[in-house]
Length: 194
Image 1 (cartoon, rainbow, N blue to C red):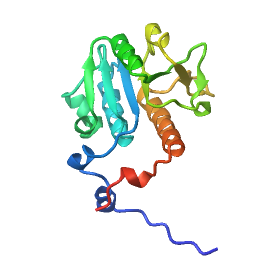
Image 2 (image 1 turned 90 degrees about the horizontal axis):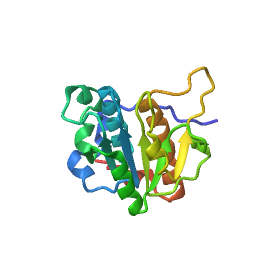
Image 3 (image 1 turned 120 degrees about the vertical axis):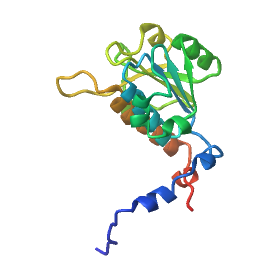
Image 4 (image 1 turned 60 degrees about the vertical axis):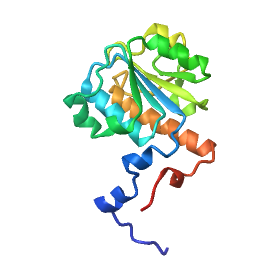
């Protein structure tokens, strides 16, 4: 078998293939929005920003008592993603959900419900808004009732859930992969090679 040697890319090589902040503003975004409801940890909020940047989501809605930039605690994990991710703050998550539904954006809750499906067994409707809930209470019942779809991550051990930012990363990249695969988008369209 004739195989090329795999070589780890240098930081400069990785950096050069990413868009600058100005270039990013001209590139298409994925039809995925995210609503964060009452996340108490600023480190989780920062991690959600950073993951959102990686998937180039359409918009991040921070709601309820979720902390918002500028905050040092958010910046420690966001690492600049608060500048690259379009975001807004809204006191009432339900109002945002209702506005999104009026625009025919599907509401997908990451929550254990009586109707939840495993996240990897779903065909996702686009555009969509993924809803993440509080670290202890989860997504509120009033938002769950508005959802078009509820998904969950199977937990095979003794714990019933993962950290919200970890769960978000798992599910977001699965949804992104589903979108890219089923909508004939090529990853090189999302990259700028300099």
